[in-house]
Length: 77
Image 1 (cartoon, one colour):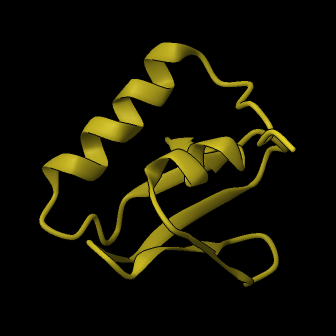
Image 2 (tube, rainbow, N blue to C red):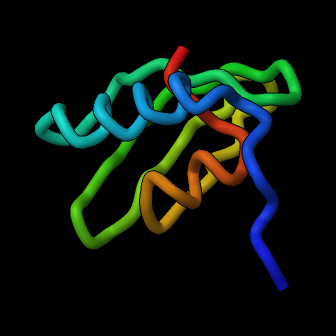
Image 3 (cartoon, rainbow, N blue to C red):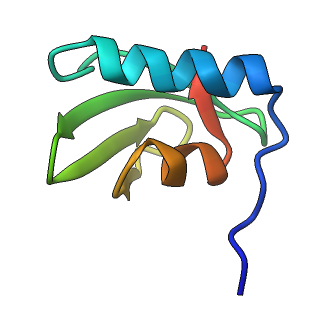
């Protein structure tokens, strides 16, 4: 089964990859979701995944790497 593809532009996806690679841990990075939600990166560990706090409902989403985060519809805001 293939992963869902992001609806964001290649430029938005590239900016997200660069922002996550550039920061020491990326904490505090503001994100937006393809469904109109907004979130903030609350934890980013090299081998522990990326945790996003969804501002709409307070849930936390965990992604193994930037590609999984992007595939799930999140990019830098």
